[in-house]
Image (cartoon, rainbow, N blue to C red; front, side, top):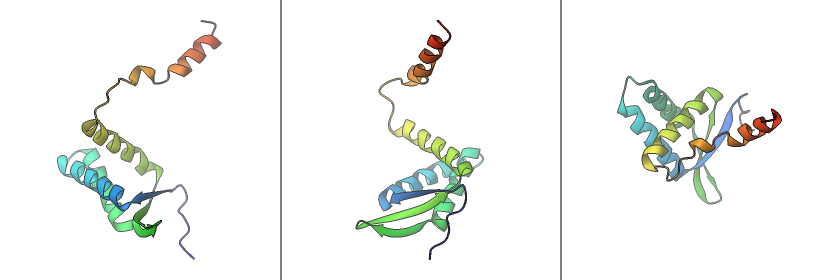
Amino acid sequence: MGKKMPENAMPVYLSANHANSLLAALDMIAAADAGNQLSETAGRLKEKILRHGRTFRAQGEDSVSIYFFPSEVIPLIKILALILSVQMPAEKDYYPMIGRANRKENSHAEGN
């Protein structure tokens, strides 16, 4: 019988290629500025994946599983957003659209 999933942990399953890309991104950020908090977090996440990740085959593909805790997911999302903003600039400005539906709903509810 396998280990019980830790409470509050979120299992993440990645193909070997996606795991390699994630580790390369974490490595790049960790090396960018050793004193930066985000760089230190990237280094810790990289080491966690390397130390605690489990490799397996699923549907004929090499894969990796790792548990992340909520305190690790938030910085991971920030790191991924940073990498994406460098690698894939947005063609459209989505910022003005964020929360727009809620603002419309609130203005109707308030009678505006």
